Length: 225
Image (cartoon, rainbow, N blue to C red; front, side, top):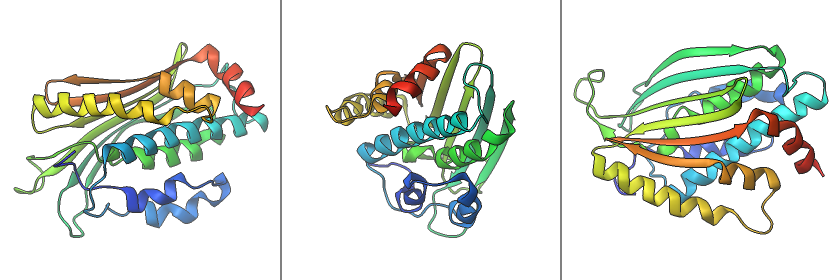
């Protein structure tokens, strides 16, 4: 998509590698840097989103096997806004935490790791005017993920230059996500793909994944086979 916001693929490489929660702090300096000005294709953005959601759920499963997370009882909720200036310089973005709660303290590291992966809106937003960076356009995004009494959900919202660009992006996302479901795709990944939808509202695009809470335990068990 032409005109996409500064990409995160260079910095996001660290986010998609396997990790143990104990080594998470070693990544902090790398992950806190502003992304460079490379452009991210929609195909790569969708791939990274799927990988992030899958890895987060797999992290919860590892915690479950250690008795540190109960998918039938525990809950969490995270919400954050991000405004990133579209310049190739060291101008810090604005990160606005809104909510970060969890009934499982052991899951906090996995939640923080997942949070940093979503801070850049997967390079899906446009560089638009704002009231923060003195005439410098910025990518505006918001995300939240939670596990409540009924479902596990992930929601990413990005701002586009116009309603038409929002509709164009939704069409591109819908045609792209199907490419990642193959006979060799894991059961967990297929379920995430089937449970992910895209929606345009005026000049905003929403990427939403919803899984019924009751399906998590059985999904983990199936994927572990």
